[in-house]
Image (cartoon, rainbow, N blue to C red; front, side):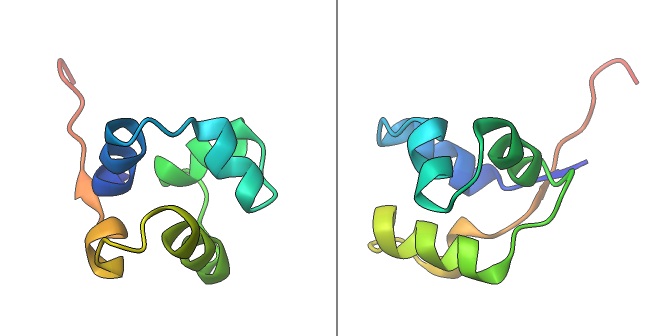
Length: 74
């Protein structure tokens, strides 16, 4: 399963809430969680807004890099 690991980590590291991030692009917390966990896709403009509003000091490619999350015990 792929996830936006760096974006998830930066949200937590900087103390933002997922609700705050979600509302900035007009999403619910559940919709944001689904996108962060690649259950649904981000629209490019959603990622751009999140980047510019919260993480402009980070490289865009760093934030949007996808990682495999292995399921333990599978």
